[in-house]
Length: 204
Ligand code: ADP
Ligand code: 5GP
Image 1 (tube, rainbow, N blue to C red):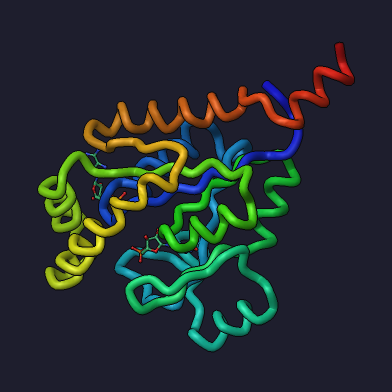
Image 2: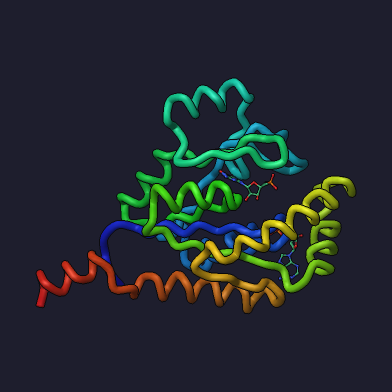
């Protein structure tokens, strides 16, 4: 395994595709000392069971916008009428420590990160079909029916952005989707880049 700076993995996909489920498994399987999941800040209200500082940092609109002005976010975006942002220092510190960092963010945010961090690895998670997506969103039980409908119609548009990503994982069977995502992490660590060229030059 190579040493050095960690890699940034950006994961997007329609709400209900299974991003959260897959990411949790990847962190557990690879180990939290090697793989950090960035916790975003948001102005949306906590859902039942969500704990401040675990699911998100829940901020008022005023506090959120102050942090935007201070340059505290690597990216931020408005999604479904609420603001979401990625805390910059958390991500930079972990990458400097050699850890991989996962951002689970929406497409606008991912495209902003792509501009500032072109070395990032961009992974799109999709459900096997719209019917499955509907049943997962309903089954999750976190959103009212009108919110589910809103998320489904947004999903159709979001799926067209798959072309902007490096990888697409279809989350049908969960075990297969987790294995595929972990394989992407492994492959990206073997990629020939500037760091590997330097390593070969200095050590052999
Ligand atoms: P997202 O983070 O993309 O919004 P979640 O991870 O919350 O999606 O998943 C949505 C729902 O679908 C959850 O109830 C989750 O348990 C379920 N789910 C996720 N992946 C699968 C899968 N492969 N098979 C069946 N159910 C799944
Ligand atoms: P939810 O409210 O369901 O937790 O998330 C709604 C959407 O916001 C999801 O698509 C999620 O990926 C996205 N999101 C969560 N955190 C961030 C963030 O820090 N930045 C951006 N741009 N999107 C985020």
